[in-house]
Image 1 (cartoon, rainbow, N blue to C red):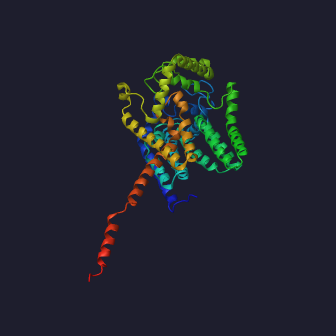
Image 2: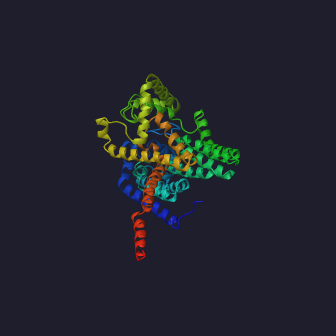
Image 3: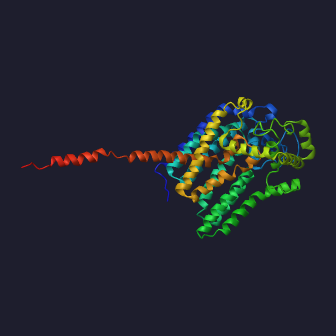
Length: 450
Protein backbone atom coordinates (compact mmCIF):
# COMPACT_ATOMS: atom_id res chain seq x y z
CA UNK A 1 0.00 0.00 0.00
CA UNK A 2 1.25 3.50 -0.88
CA UNK A 3 1.76 5.79 2.08
CA UNK A 4 2.32 9.49 2.47
CA UNK A 5 5.88 10.72 2.79
CA UNK A 6 6.67 12.54 6.05
CA UNK A 7 6.17 16.03 4.60
CA UNK A 8 3.79 15.36 1.73
CA UNK A 9 0.96 17.55 3.06
CA UNK A 10 3.33 20.47 3.40
CA UNK A 11 4.72 19.86 -0.08
CA UNK A 12 1.23 19.80 -1.58
CA UNK A 13 0.33 23.02 0.20
CA UNK A 14 3.33 24.81 -1.27
CA UNK A 15 2.67 23.36 -4.71
CA UNK A 16 -0.89 24.69 -4.75
CA UNK A 17 0.10 28.01 -3.18
CA UNK A 18 2.88 28.55 -5.71
CA UNK A 19 0.55 27.73 -8.58
CA UNK A 20 -2.09 30.16 -7.29
CA UNK A 21 0.38 33.02 -6.80
CA UNK A 22 1.80 32.56 -10.31
CA UNK A 23 -1.67 32.68 -11.83
CA UNK A 24 -2.66 35.76 -9.85
CA UNK A 25 0.48 37.58 -10.95
CA UNK A 26 -0.21 36.71 -14.58
CA UNK A 27 -3.82 37.82 -14.14
CA UNK A 28 -2.70 41.31 -13.10
CA UNK A 29 -1.13 41.79 -16.53
CA UNK A 30 -3.72 40.03 -18.70
CA UNK A 31 -7.20 40.44 -17.16
CA UNK A 32 -8.03 43.69 -18.96
CA UNK A 33 -8.52 41.89 -22.27
CA UNK A 34 -11.65 40.30 -20.78
CA UNK A 35 -13.27 43.63 -19.90
CA UNK A 36 -12.81 45.20 -23.31
CA UNK A 37 -16.17 46.89 -24.08
CA UNK A 38 -15.74 46.29 -27.82
CA UNK A 39 -18.60 44.34 -29.44
CA UNK A 40 -20.72 44.65 -26.31
CA UNK A 41 -18.12 43.04 -24.03
CA UNK A 42 -17.90 40.02 -26.35
CA UNK A 43 -14.66 38.74 -24.80
CA UNK A 44 -16.33 38.48 -21.37
CA UNK A 45 -17.60 34.93 -21.70
CA UNK A 46 -18.60 35.21 -25.36
CA UNK A 47 -21.96 33.48 -25.96
CA UNK A 48 -22.06 32.15 -22.40
CA UNK A 49 -21.56 35.66 -21.06
CA UNK A 50 -24.64 36.81 -22.96
CA UNK A 51 -26.71 33.92 -21.65
CA UNK A 52 -25.59 34.85 -18.13
CA UNK A 53 -26.67 38.44 -18.75
CA UNK A 54 -30.09 37.22 -19.92
CA UNK A 55 -30.48 35.12 -16.76
CA UNK A 56 -29.66 38.10 -14.52
CA UNK A 57 -31.98 40.34 -16.58
CA UNK A 58 -34.91 38.00 -15.97
CA UNK A 59 -35.12 36.51 -19.47
CA UNK A 60 -34.00 33.03 -18.45
CA UNK A 61 -31.52 30.82 -20.28
CA UNK A 62 -31.63 32.68 -23.60
CA UNK A 63 -30.13 35.26 -25.96
CA UNK A 64 -26.61 33.91 -26.68
CA UNK A 65 -25.73 36.64 -29.19
CA UNK A 66 -26.31 40.38 -29.60
CA UNK A 67 -29.94 40.92 -28.68
CA UNK A 68 -33.13 39.10 -27.76
CA UNK A 69 -33.43 35.83 -29.72
CA UNK A 70 -35.33 33.58 -27.34
CA UNK A 71 -34.49 30.43 -25.36
CA UNK A 72 -31.31 28.57 -26.16
CA UNK A 73 -29.67 25.19 -25.64
CA UNK A 74 -26.48 26.31 -27.36
CA UNK A 75 -24.51 25.73 -24.17
CA UNK A 76 -24.73 23.47 -21.16
CA UNK A 77 -26.23 25.20 -18.11
CA UNK A 78 -23.63 25.05 -15.32
CA UNK A 79 -21.16 27.68 -16.44
CA UNK A 80 -23.66 30.32 -17.64
CA UNK A 81 -25.43 30.06 -14.29
CA UNK A 82 -22.07 30.38 -12.54
CA UNK A 83 -21.39 33.54 -14.55
CA UNK A 84 -24.89 34.77 -13.76
CA UNK A 85 -24.17 34.42 -10.03
CA UNK A 86 -20.96 36.37 -10.57
CA UNK A 87 -22.87 39.11 -12.41
CA UNK A 88 -25.56 39.28 -9.74
CA UNK A 89 -22.97 39.90 -7.02
CA UNK A 90 -20.44 42.08 -8.84
CA UNK A 91 -22.33 43.58 -11.78
CA UNK A 92 -22.89 42.56 -15.40
CA UNK A 93 -19.66 42.68 -17.42
CA UNK A 94 -18.03 44.72 -14.66
CA UNK A 95 -14.33 44.82 -13.82
CA UNK A 96 -15.08 43.31 -10.39
CA UNK A 97 -17.02 40.44 -11.96
CA UNK A 98 -14.13 39.79 -14.33
CA UNK A 99 -11.55 39.68 -11.53
CA UNK A 100 -13.81 37.44 -9.42
CA UNK A 101 -14.34 34.81 -12.15
CA UNK A 102 -10.66 34.88 -13.13
CA UNK A 103 -9.59 34.37 -9.51
CA UNK A 104 -11.99 31.43 -9.39
CA UNK A 105 -10.52 29.97 -12.58
CA UNK A 106 -6.98 30.53 -11.28
CA UNK A 107 -7.90 28.72 -8.06
CA UNK A 108 -9.45 25.82 -9.98
CA UNK A 109 -6.33 25.49 -12.13
CA UNK A 110 -4.13 25.57 -9.01
CA UNK A 111 -6.19 23.00 -7.10
CA UNK A 112 -5.88 20.62 -10.06
CA UNK A 113 -2.38 19.89 -8.73
CA UNK A 114 -4.01 17.76 -6.01
CA UNK A 115 -5.90 15.17 -8.11
CA UNK A 116 -2.93 15.10 -10.52
CA UNK A 117 -0.63 14.18 -7.65
CA UNK A 118 -2.97 11.58 -6.21
CA UNK A 119 -3.80 9.72 -9.42
CA UNK A 120 -0.17 9.84 -10.60
CA UNK A 121 0.99 8.48 -7.26
CA UNK A 122 -1.59 5.72 -7.40
CA UNK A 123 -0.50 4.72 -10.91
CA UNK A 124 3.25 5.32 -10.73
CA UNK A 125 5.41 6.53 -7.80
CA UNK A 126 5.35 9.35 -5.32
CA UNK A 127 8.36 10.93 -7.00
CA UNK A 128 6.65 10.90 -10.38
CA UNK A 129 3.49 12.31 -8.79
CA UNK A 130 5.38 15.23 -7.25
CA UNK A 131 7.07 15.86 -10.59
CA UNK A 132 3.66 15.91 -12.29
CA UNK A 133 2.20 18.33 -9.73
CA UNK A 134 5.15 20.72 -10.06
CA UNK A 135 5.02 20.46 -13.84
CA UNK A 136 1.38 21.56 -13.68
CA UNK A 137 2.36 24.58 -11.60
CA UNK A 138 4.56 25.95 -14.40
CA UNK A 139 2.94 24.45 -17.50
CA UNK A 140 2.23 27.53 -19.68
CA UNK A 141 -1.23 26.48 -20.83
CA UNK A 142 -2.39 25.70 -17.29
CA UNK A 143 -1.37 29.26 -16.36
CA UNK A 144 -2.34 31.21 -19.49
CA UNK A 145 -5.70 29.88 -20.65
CA UNK A 146 -7.65 30.15 -17.35
CA UNK A 147 -6.58 33.79 -17.14
CA UNK A 148 -7.02 34.88 -20.74
CA UNK A 149 -10.37 33.21 -21.53
CA UNK A 150 -13.55 33.17 -19.46
CA UNK A 151 -14.98 29.75 -20.32
CA UNK A 152 -16.07 26.45 -18.77
CA UNK A 153 -13.00 24.53 -19.99
CA UNK A 154 -10.94 25.09 -16.86
CA UNK A 155 -13.58 23.79 -14.47
CA UNK A 156 -14.05 20.84 -16.85
CA UNK A 157 -10.31 20.21 -16.63
CA UNK A 158 -10.49 20.05 -12.84
CA UNK A 159 -13.47 17.70 -13.00
CA UNK A 160 -11.68 15.40 -15.46
CA UNK A 161 -8.69 15.17 -13.10
CA UNK A 162 -10.96 14.54 -10.12
CA UNK A 163 -13.14 11.96 -11.87
CA UNK A 164 -10.03 10.21 -13.19
CA UNK A 165 -8.79 9.85 -9.61
CA UNK A 166 -12.22 8.66 -8.48
CA UNK A 167 -12.44 6.01 -11.18
CA UNK A 168 -8.98 4.67 -10.28
CA UNK A 169 -10.24 4.22 -6.74
CA UNK A 170 -13.52 2.66 -7.88
CA UNK A 171 -11.73 -0.15 -9.70
CA UNK A 172 -11.37 -1.76 -6.28
CA UNK A 173 -14.69 -0.75 -4.74
CA UNK A 174 -18.15 -2.19 -5.30
CA UNK A 175 -19.85 -0.02 -2.67
CA UNK A 176 -23.06 1.29 -4.14
CA UNK A 177 -22.73 4.69 -2.46
CA UNK A 178 -19.33 5.23 -4.07
CA UNK A 179 -20.69 4.53 -7.54
CA UNK A 180 -23.75 6.70 -6.98
CA UNK A 181 -21.40 9.53 -6.03
CA UNK A 182 -19.46 8.95 -9.23
CA UNK A 183 -22.70 9.07 -11.22
CA UNK A 184 -23.79 12.33 -9.60
CA UNK A 185 -20.41 13.99 -10.21
CA UNK A 186 -20.36 12.68 -13.79
CA UNK A 187 -23.82 14.13 -14.41
CA UNK A 188 -22.64 17.49 -13.08
CA UNK A 189 -19.59 17.30 -15.37
CA UNK A 190 -21.79 16.59 -18.40
CA UNK A 191 -23.98 19.59 -17.56
CA UNK A 192 -20.78 21.63 -17.59
CA UNK A 193 -19.26 20.20 -20.79
CA UNK A 194 -21.01 17.35 -22.67
CA UNK A 195 -17.76 16.47 -24.45
CA UNK A 196 -16.77 14.66 -21.25
CA UNK A 197 -19.28 11.99 -22.28
CA UNK A 198 -16.59 10.86 -24.70
CA UNK A 199 -14.52 9.40 -21.85
CA UNK A 200 -16.61 8.95 -18.69
CA UNK A 201 -18.64 5.89 -19.85
CA UNK A 202 -15.49 4.14 -21.10
CA UNK A 203 -13.65 4.79 -17.85
CA UNK A 204 -16.64 3.44 -15.91
CA UNK A 205 -16.77 0.31 -18.06
CA UNK A 206 -13.04 -0.23 -17.46
CA UNK A 207 -13.50 -0.01 -13.67
CA UNK A 208 -16.54 -2.29 -13.76
CA UNK A 209 -14.63 -4.82 -15.82
CA UNK A 210 -11.95 -4.80 -13.13
CA UNK A 211 -14.62 -5.58 -10.53
CA UNK A 212 -15.98 -8.38 -12.72
CA UNK A 213 -12.51 -9.91 -13.12
CA UNK A 214 -12.09 -9.88 -9.34
CA UNK A 215 -15.46 -11.62 -8.88
CA UNK A 216 -16.84 -8.58 -7.10
CA UNK A 217 -20.38 -7.35 -7.64
CA UNK A 218 -20.56 -4.91 -10.53
CA UNK A 219 -24.15 -4.82 -11.81
CA UNK A 220 -25.63 -2.86 -8.92
CA UNK A 221 -22.77 -0.32 -8.89
CA UNK A 222 -23.21 0.14 -12.66
CA UNK A 223 -26.96 0.63 -12.33
CA UNK A 224 -26.48 3.04 -9.42
CA UNK A 225 -23.99 5.18 -11.36
CA UNK A 226 -26.16 5.31 -14.49
CA UNK A 227 -29.33 6.18 -12.56
CA UNK A 228 -27.52 8.86 -10.55
CA UNK A 229 -26.17 10.44 -13.75
CA UNK A 230 -29.61 10.37 -15.38
CA UNK A 231 -31.24 11.93 -12.31
CA UNK A 232 -28.65 14.73 -12.38
CA UNK A 233 -29.05 15.48 -16.10
CA UNK A 234 -32.81 14.86 -16.44
CA UNK A 235 -34.07 18.28 -15.19
CA UNK A 236 -32.16 19.97 -18.00
CA UNK A 237 -33.35 17.39 -20.52
CA UNK A 238 -36.94 18.00 -19.42
CA UNK A 239 -36.44 21.75 -19.73
CA UNK A 240 -35.17 21.35 -23.29
CA UNK A 241 -38.04 19.06 -24.24
CA UNK A 242 -40.62 21.49 -22.85
CA UNK A 243 -39.05 24.59 -24.41
CA UNK A 244 -38.06 23.19 -27.82
CA UNK A 245 -40.53 20.28 -28.15
CA UNK A 246 -37.62 18.06 -29.07
CA UNK A 247 -35.27 15.64 -27.30
CA UNK A 248 -32.02 17.53 -26.67
CA UNK A 249 -29.85 15.74 -24.10
CA UNK A 250 -27.72 18.78 -23.18
CA UNK A 251 -26.74 21.00 -26.16
CA UNK A 252 -28.11 21.49 -29.66
CA UNK A 253 -25.12 23.05 -31.42
CA UNK A 254 -23.27 20.02 -32.83
CA UNK A 255 -24.50 20.67 -36.39
CA UNK A 256 -23.16 24.23 -36.25
CA UNK A 257 -19.78 22.96 -35.05
CA UNK A 258 -19.54 20.70 -38.10
CA UNK A 259 -20.30 23.69 -40.34
CA UNK A 260 -17.73 25.92 -38.62
CA UNK A 261 -14.92 23.50 -39.42
CA UNK A 262 -16.06 22.07 -42.74
CA UNK A 263 -17.03 24.79 -45.20
CA UNK A 264 -14.09 24.58 -47.57
CA UNK A 265 -11.81 27.05 -45.79
CA UNK A 266 -8.64 25.24 -44.76
CA UNK A 267 -6.58 28.34 -44.01
CA UNK A 268 -7.68 28.43 -40.37
CA UNK A 269 -8.42 25.76 -37.77
CA UNK A 270 -12.03 26.92 -37.73
CA UNK A 271 -13.90 29.43 -39.85
CA UNK A 272 -15.33 31.63 -37.11
CA UNK A 273 -14.53 34.99 -38.61
CA UNK A 274 -13.75 34.27 -42.25
CA UNK A 275 -17.11 32.56 -42.78
CA UNK A 276 -19.64 34.90 -44.38
CA UNK A 277 -22.62 33.01 -43.00
CA UNK A 278 -22.15 33.00 -39.24
CA UNK A 279 -24.84 34.80 -37.20
CA UNK A 280 -22.34 36.74 -35.07
CA UNK A 281 -20.65 38.11 -38.24
CA UNK A 282 -23.25 38.45 -40.97
CA UNK A 283 -26.45 40.44 -40.53
CA UNK A 284 -28.35 38.26 -43.02
CA UNK A 285 -27.41 35.14 -41.09
CA UNK A 286 -28.29 36.84 -37.80
CA UNK A 287 -31.74 37.68 -39.17
CA UNK A 288 -32.12 34.09 -40.38
CA UNK A 289 -31.13 32.75 -36.95
CA UNK A 290 -33.81 34.91 -35.35
CA UNK A 291 -36.45 34.10 -37.97
CA UNK A 292 -35.94 30.32 -38.11
CA UNK A 293 -35.21 29.83 -34.45
CA UNK A 294 -32.19 28.08 -33.03
CA UNK A 295 -33.21 24.49 -33.75
CA UNK A 296 -34.10 25.03 -37.41
CA UNK A 297 -31.11 27.27 -38.01
CA UNK A 298 -28.67 24.73 -36.60
CA UNK A 299 -30.35 22.01 -38.63
CA UNK A 300 -29.79 24.10 -41.77
CA UNK A 301 -26.09 24.55 -40.94
CA UNK A 302 -25.77 20.83 -40.35
CA UNK A 303 -27.28 20.07 -43.75
CA UNK A 304 -24.86 22.50 -45.37
CA UNK A 305 -21.90 20.84 -43.65
CA UNK A 306 -23.15 17.36 -44.60
CA UNK A 307 -23.56 18.37 -48.24
CA UNK A 308 -20.08 19.86 -48.40
CA UNK A 309 -18.46 16.81 -46.79
CA UNK A 310 -20.30 14.43 -49.14
CA UNK A 311 -19.19 16.47 -52.15
CA UNK A 312 -15.57 16.76 -50.95
CA UNK A 313 -14.70 13.51 -49.10
CA UNK A 314 -10.96 13.72 -49.81
CA UNK A 315 -10.84 17.30 -48.56
CA UNK A 316 -12.63 16.22 -45.37
CA UNK A 317 -10.24 13.29 -44.87
CA UNK A 318 -7.29 15.65 -45.27
CA UNK A 319 -8.77 18.15 -42.83
CA UNK A 320 -9.42 15.39 -40.29
CA UNK A 321 -5.77 14.32 -40.55
CA UNK A 322 -4.63 17.92 -40.15
CA UNK A 323 -6.78 18.29 -37.04
CA UNK A 324 -5.29 15.14 -35.53
CA UNK A 325 -1.79 16.52 -36.12
CA UNK A 326 -2.82 19.90 -34.73
CA UNK A 327 -4.18 18.47 -31.47
CA UNK A 328 -0.88 16.80 -30.67
CA UNK A 329 1.65 19.23 -32.16
CA UNK A 330 -0.03 22.61 -32.54
CA UNK A 331 1.02 22.71 -36.20
CA UNK A 332 -1.60 23.82 -38.70
CA UNK A 333 0.04 25.51 -41.65
CA UNK A 334 3.41 26.65 -42.98
CA UNK A 335 1.71 29.34 -45.04
CA UNK A 336 3.52 32.67 -44.60
CA UNK A 337 0.29 34.64 -44.10
CA UNK A 338 -0.84 32.21 -41.39
CA UNK A 339 2.56 32.34 -39.64
CA UNK A 340 2.58 36.14 -39.76
CA UNK A 341 -0.62 36.08 -37.69
CA UNK A 342 0.51 33.24 -35.41
CA UNK A 343 3.88 34.65 -34.42
CA UNK A 344 4.48 32.33 -31.45
CA UNK A 345 3.74 29.17 -33.44
CA UNK A 346 7.38 27.95 -33.47
CA UNK A 347 7.49 28.02 -29.66
CA UNK A 348 4.04 26.48 -29.27
CA UNK A 349 4.70 23.73 -31.80
CA UNK A 350 8.00 22.84 -30.12
CA UNK A 351 6.42 22.71 -26.66
CA UNK A 352 3.35 20.69 -27.66
CA UNK A 353 5.28 18.27 -29.86
CA UNK A 354 7.79 17.56 -27.10
CA UNK A 355 5.02 17.21 -24.52
CA UNK A 356 3.05 14.83 -26.74
CA UNK A 357 6.15 12.74 -27.44
CA UNK A 358 6.86 12.44 -23.71
CA UNK A 359 3.18 11.63 -23.09
CA UNK A 360 3.07 8.68 -25.46
CA UNK A 361 6.48 7.51 -24.28
CA UNK A 362 5.10 7.62 -20.74
CA UNK A 363 2.04 5.67 -21.84
CA UNK A 364 4.27 3.01 -23.41
CA UNK A 365 6.42 2.86 -20.27
CA UNK A 366 3.30 2.49 -18.12
CA UNK A 367 2.13 -0.40 -20.31
CA UNK A 368 5.57 -2.03 -20.39
CA UNK A 369 6.41 -1.60 -16.69
CA UNK A 370 2.99 -1.54 -15.00
CA UNK A 371 0.85 -3.51 -17.44
CA UNK A 372 -2.31 -2.82 -19.40
CA UNK A 373 -4.31 -2.50 -16.18
CA UNK A 374 -2.48 0.74 -15.32
CA UNK A 375 -2.08 2.07 -18.87
CA UNK A 376 -5.67 1.44 -20.04
CA UNK A 377 -7.48 4.39 -18.37
CA UNK A 378 -4.81 6.79 -19.62
CA UNK A 379 -5.14 5.38 -23.13
CA UNK A 380 -8.93 5.75 -22.97
CA UNK A 381 -8.65 9.46 -22.21
CA UNK A 382 -6.01 10.15 -24.87
CA UNK A 383 -7.84 8.20 -27.57
CA UNK A 384 -11.51 9.03 -27.09
CA UNK A 385 -11.59 12.64 -25.90
CA UNK A 386 -10.26 14.38 -29.05
CA UNK A 387 -12.35 12.38 -31.57
CA UNK A 388 -15.18 14.91 -31.77
CA UNK A 389 -12.65 17.67 -32.46
CA UNK A 390 -10.94 15.63 -35.17
CA UNK A 391 -14.31 15.48 -36.93
CA UNK A 392 -15.53 19.06 -36.40
CA UNK A 393 -12.88 21.70 -35.69
CA UNK A 394 -10.09 22.45 -33.24
CA UNK A 395 -8.52 25.24 -31.25
CA UNK A 396 -5.51 25.24 -28.94
CA UNK A 397 -7.52 25.20 -25.71
CA UNK A 398 -9.78 22.32 -26.75
CA UNK A 399 -7.55 19.59 -25.32
CA UNK A 400 -7.04 21.42 -22.01
CA UNK A 401 -9.56 19.25 -20.09
CA UNK A 402 -7.33 16.18 -20.55
CA UNK A 403 -4.00 17.91 -19.99
CA UNK A 404 -3.77 16.73 -16.35
CA UNK A 405 -3.50 13.18 -17.75
CA UNK A 406 -1.04 14.35 -20.41
CA UNK A 407 1.18 16.08 -17.84
CA UNK A 408 1.09 13.05 -15.53
CA UNK A 409 2.29 10.67 -18.25
CA UNK A 410 4.98 13.08 -19.47
CA UNK A 411 6.23 13.67 -15.92
CA UNK A 412 6.31 9.91 -15.29
CA UNK A 413 8.47 9.43 -18.39
CA UNK A 414 10.92 12.21 -17.47
CA UNK A 415 11.10 11.19 -13.81
CA UNK A 416 11.68 7.54 -14.72
CA UNK A 417 14.51 8.46 -17.06
CA UNK A 418 16.25 10.63 -14.48
CA UNK A 419 15.73 7.97 -11.82
CA UNK A 420 17.29 5.39 -14.15
CA UNK A 421 20.34 7.59 -14.74
CA UNK A 422 20.71 8.17 -10.99
CA UNK A 423 20.52 4.45 -10.22
CA UNK A 424 23.09 3.70 -12.90
CA UNK A 425 25.53 6.19 -11.35
CA UNK A 426 24.99 4.83 -7.85
CA UNK A 427 25.58 1.25 -8.97
CA UNK A 428 28.94 2.00 -10.62
CA UNK A 429 31.81 0.21 -8.88
CA UNK A 430 35.49 1.01 -9.28
CA UNK A 431 36.83 -2.36 -10.37
CA UNK A 432 40.46 -1.33 -9.82
CA UNK A 433 40.30 -1.23 -6.02
CA UNK A 434 39.31 -4.88 -5.43
CA UNK A 435 42.07 -5.96 -7.85
CA UNK A 436 44.81 -4.01 -6.02
CA UNK A 437 43.97 -4.73 -2.41
CA UNK A 438 44.36 -8.53 -2.48
CA UNK A 439 47.67 -8.26 -4.31
CA UNK A 440 49.10 -5.90 -1.73
CA UNK A 441 47.78 -8.01 1.08
CA UNK A 442 49.42 -11.13 -0.29
CA UNK A 443 52.75 -9.36 -0.77
CA UNK A 444 52.72 -7.93 2.75
CA UNK A 445 52.24 -11.36 4.28
CA UNK A 446 54.59 -13.31 2.00
CA UNK A 447 56.93 -15.52 4.12
CA UNK A 448 60.70 -14.88 3.87
CA UNK A 449 62.61 -17.28 1.68
CA UNK A 450 64.96 -19.55 3.50
